[in-house]
Structure formats: C-alpha cells, structure tokens
Length: 428
Image (cartoon, rainbow, N blue to C red; front, side):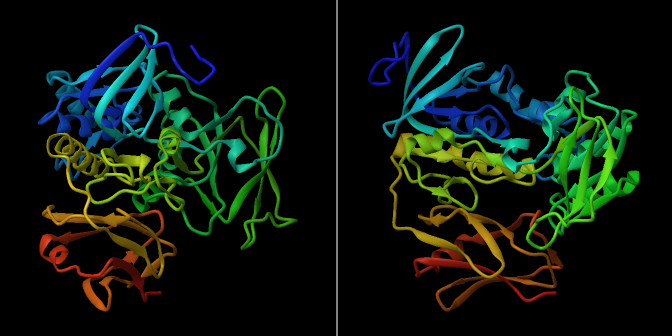
C-alpha cells in the first residue's frame, strides 16, 4: 500500500547477509558462491529459476565451465539443483520494488505480501531484456504476428506454439539467428534476415550454423520500412539503407509473410540500479564495477548481463562467482575500498569492463571489451602510462564478439599509474 511519502505497509521483515536479485545463470552462480560463507536470500520475479536458459534448447553452453557442450536447460539445471541442496532461501514470483543505499530492500509476492529485507550485501543480477518495435520506431500498422526473437523462442520451445508459417527476421542478433534455424526445423519458411548495419550482429558460428547451413539469406544494410496488415501481418516492406542508416528511395520491395521477428539487441535491466543511484556507464547501459564486481556503492555488487551483455553464459557464470565470493567477503571482512585505477577504452575499443581496478588481492583479472570495427591482423595493446603491459596479435576482431584479456597478479602488482588503457591497433 502506498502512502504519501511513498511508504509501504510491511507485513514481513527479514535479515540476511547477502541478497541476490535475479535467478538467472548469473544470480544462481553468485548465490551459490556467496552461500559458501554467508546466509543468502535469492529473489526471482518469475515462476521458475534459470532465467532465459530453460527455453534455449540448442547446444552451445558449458564449453568452458563444464568442458562439454550442453543445452540451456542442462546448464541451468546444474545450478538449480545445487541451489536446492544448499541453505539458500529462494523466493520466486517475488518482485523487488525498492532498494536504497543502506541495503534495505522492499519486495512483494502473492503469498507473503510486502517484504522488507535488511541485508549486508546485495548482488544485482537482473539480466537484460529485448528491444521492442516501439524502441526502434518501425512504422506501419499494429497487427498480430510481430514478436521479439526471445518471445518466439519461448512460444515454440516452452509453450509448443508455432507463431507463424512464413517469417521475416529484422536484426541479426544471436537469438534471431538461432530462431531462423528453429523456424525451418519446425516446418516454417524464412524469407531472410535483414540487418541495418553493414556487418552481422551475432556470433560467426551462428551465422554459419543457423543461416549458411540452412540456405537462409542475410541482407546487410537493410531494414524494414513498413508493416502491412490489420488483424494479422500480411507482409513487410524492406529497403536498403545508406551510411546514415536511412532507407534509400527506390530500393523498397514488399515481402509477403505472416510473422515479423525482431532481433534488434538487448538492454541491461537496470531500473533498480538507477533507483539506488549507482554510477552508470552510458556505453554498456550497466553499472560501473571494479574487478570484484562491486559497484560505486560499497557492498552492492553486480554481475552478468545487467553489467554488460555477454556473448557466452560461461562468462556470465564466471563473473557471477566473483561477485558472490566478494559479496560474502564484504560481509565477513568489510573489504577496504582502495584507490582505483581507471580502465580506458582507447583506439577501436567501445568499452572495457571492469571500469576500475581497486585492489591487488586477486590472482588475476579478466578485462572484457568490444571493438568498434572489424579488423584482421590487429594487435591488442594494454598500457599503463608509457609502459606496455600486455600485447597480443588477433587473427580477427569483430564488434559482436567479446575480446578477453587476463592480467596476472604479477602484472597487476606492477601497476603504478592511475589509468589502464586498452587499444586495438592496426589491421585491415
């Protein structure tokens, strides 16, 4: 119940060491790691744990974490089983309404009403969401048959519903590429995948395995300029775009279809992060973090796609365990927030995570970053002041594919400047 001061009637009050918000792969891994040395509550707004993974029935998960290829349900079930065997308190169908900098959480569910949780540390792992038609301003009517790629994936793989018969896919994000193959396997037709950028948005392996292997054409520098249909999609108009992403007059063509699927990018789910007042990175749309995944507010950590959108769930699990481990350490030891070294995105680098390095107690630190443009034969150079501390030749770098660099403790101990710069130089 709302009051004049935005207050709630609290029916249940709880205290714990660590509260993890979000029960996808990041939240599960963080909660398990934190539970080794702390009391943990895990809050998930959905009916089930696992996040998006239960609907990802294709293989491609677990290569690095488990050293074998798993489906999404198999990957998530490993963590779900471990959580069920632990002392972690799990509350599903529970929505977090409010968090403050004192780590006071207000949440609600139908069974308990309004909950107040006073916690010593928080791990934010809310994941990300898909961009919708309204966010990319596709003109035309508003008929049935327009879906995001993730929604169409859930309809087929969880609900057993085929969303259409003849498909056009706008955007070449990984889920859209995977769904192009899925539609074919379920007896549908895919006229083509249309990408507004001059290069694909998904991983190369998905271009090959999901489009090339099934003879599905990919049209780069194209977009949808109109959706036609009243009750149901009857077709779309596509056109080439110029260097400014504006449709070129005279290149339009009409494509009959009954389903338009949008695979136009993901947005980290950070309404709660902004409510708390965390420092945010405008390039990633996620909170600024250090190598322990701690945010600008002491004792509040973040991990997974809420920080930046990852390519692989394996990387999500790895950084989530770092967040969970240090959230528990924060509770036990009240870890010191030392002076910080800023990581800087240099030549042909869009962003670098973590954005700060604070301590030297970790055995190694992994830097994650994306390039701005595709290059072959480029060199990754990491420098501190005038000194180059890391250099590696890359066969090819692409914006859709994350680059990772592991810095050893020996290298970290030698850092004396307050800025670490990442450049990707040269190449063609």
